[in-house]
Length: 100
Image 1 (cartoon, rainbow, N blue to C red):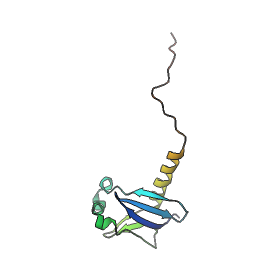
Image 2: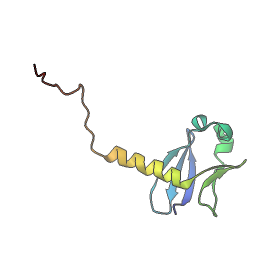
Image 3: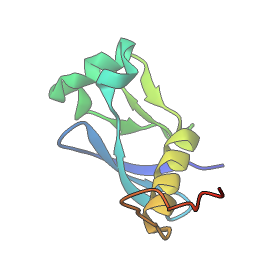
Image 4: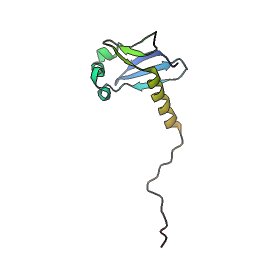
């Protein structure tokens, strides 16, 4: 089970997070995209009081706002894999020879 060990608020509604499997990185909370109760996190005074729930290993804020550590971990580790994977960029589609 993935758990968050530490979470530190950063500018731009992001968190510096460290997980119990040793992985760590920056997670963009994106309160505007999430909407609802997450809009309260647009207030830096609320966002900056983030804590780690010791029972569930998730980040949480006053008012019952929390994020699933599994979802955060998956999002962060998938992004790392995508960035480190080899990439091929093309300016145009490959040319085809027209039979005919």
